[in-house]
Image (cartoon, rainbow, N blue to C red; front, side):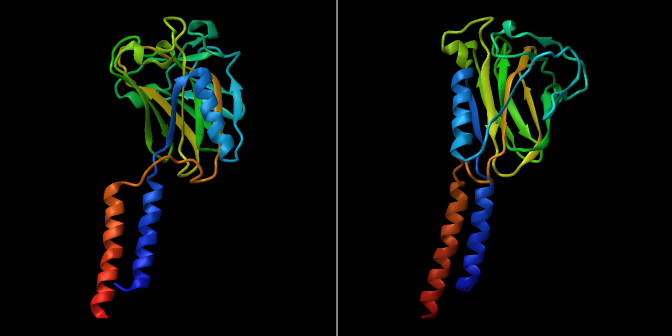
Length: 236
């Protein structure tokens, strides 16, 4: 392999490594999680959009203007007021079933996004371990948090309890942009609520990823360049 070919190969490998960067996830109390999400988006030079759920009735689809929310299995879900778990807006009920991705909700946006955050209530109360996921359409499924006990709920850990346990979760996957994002939990037998105030954004590609390339890929890249150097010295 000549040096030019090696550089092309290295660039190709580097591009594939960067594409594997880990999405940034958010898992905290409402105020702390919203602050973290907002700070990340604004630091990337983008704008955070907000919409607080209100005026909804039970159903399986809600058109909210910039986006719609639908149940992933098409079944009707109840809607609860903020007082149910101390959220900032209305919450849609979710009853996790197997397979879990088919018993969640999907946000479908009119314009492409790669960041989404919202509130989840009544989580970690039973049926642990219970995990929460966000799946960007066409991208990776992101594990946001896992509860092995009720105390793993960030709001409960901060002093909350039944009726006051709503948390903020979210993710930014800046590997691409998407028009739909699905949320679900796998605590079978547990009932969740999701909604509150929805935050979304579209940041520049590669502007906020906190992923580190896999060591094996970095080693491969290093070995490839080292091999080129050895070959050049041998010919010399």
